[in-house]
Image (cartoon, rainbow, N blue to C red; front, side):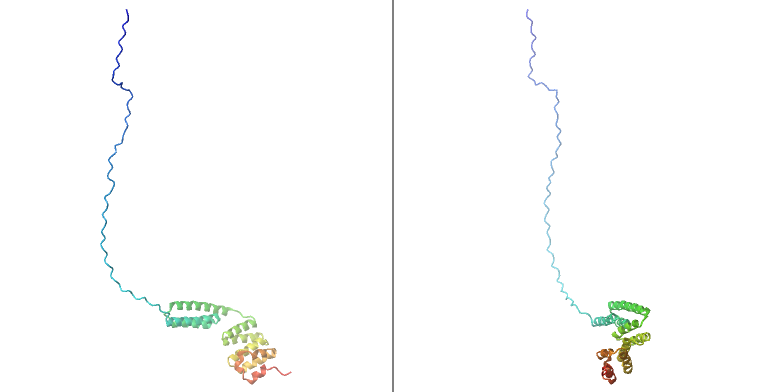
Length: 230
């Protein structure tokens, strides 16, 4: 007898459930964005500024030139500086001291005068320590002093030079000139005669030397500077 076939299972119409679990996606909760726009600020109303009070313009001070006292102080200081450059330090010191005494209201001028006094005194000390060993040492100093008009000091050095070299014609000539400048006519003629005796050419120098201008009308002087007849 035929076998009875097993009844086939009827396919259900229900979808077969999958064993794979569905992955759930995590979503961030997004908060609703706050309104980012700030409310427009209200324009500030600036009150009209009050006009500044008018100030009367001050007169511009006019520049004044140096005072007469300042100009006088500068002039006196310059006179002392000239003496200093001429190496007449003793007279320069006197001039600067006078500036300090006469212009007490000019501190800058006084400071300059005081500094120059120190420099002059230093030079005077150096000169005092100088040792004159030869007649030419005294003679050279004497000539410098005569050129500055200090004939009296020059004469002291010339006398010292003459002691070391009694027959030196240039020393005798310088002593004659110094005496002429001092108005000592006889002494000037005496030393000039000795100078010409040791060196005849000195008569031609004396003819053109302004130091002997005081003797220009003296007959004895004319005889000395006139060459003898051959």
